[in-house]
Amino acid sequence: TATKAYRDLARAAGKGGEADSKVLAFPSGVALTLQIISDMVLSSMDDAEGGSKYIPDAMSSEYAVEALEAMLPAILQPADPPRKSIQSEKACSEISQMLITYADVAGTSGDAKASAKEAAAKIKEAGSSARPILEISHDLWTQYRKREGQPLDQFVPSEKGVEADMNGPLDFLPCANPDGGGCNII
Image (cartoon, rainbow, N blue to C red; front, side, top):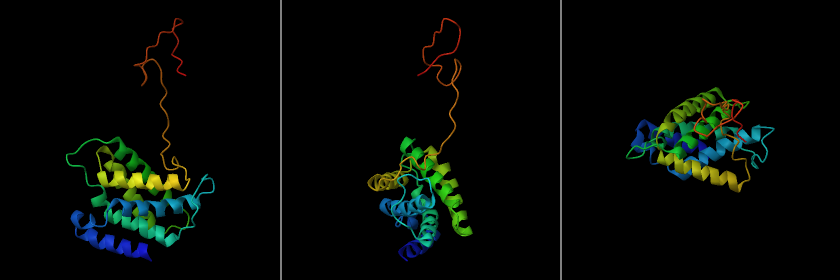
């Protein structure tokens, strides 16, 4: 299939280093691999409201994960000059969560699970600075999901909230309660 050929090319280019893999790691190509993987994840989830309209081929999603992992040196290339980016942070978080979810899909091969987990770990680590190729790819993937009516919050990690009190993370808010109790934030 085309995804197998793309994976094989990405692996061969990856052996040449970042410069060679950058040729294949163009944002629309990376976004396509994300679409294939996320379609597989959404179609495997019973409770995914507005899930994928497509029944993806399991092997195509495995090849897409392996291609993505092979292109990571180029995809995660930092911006020049280095800078912080909330967009990259969000992209790294969402894509790594999607890959972790993919690794848990029943029937996924051991190699694909290992590739997904390895890629997820590397992508999550990279969230501290701007990654232009990843940002653009994530934006294209998000546009695809909007067009297809897929849930945009499906792969947003659900981290537990932090309880706030007078000395908590919201202590910058003016809080004067005559009975000495805590603040009510509504």
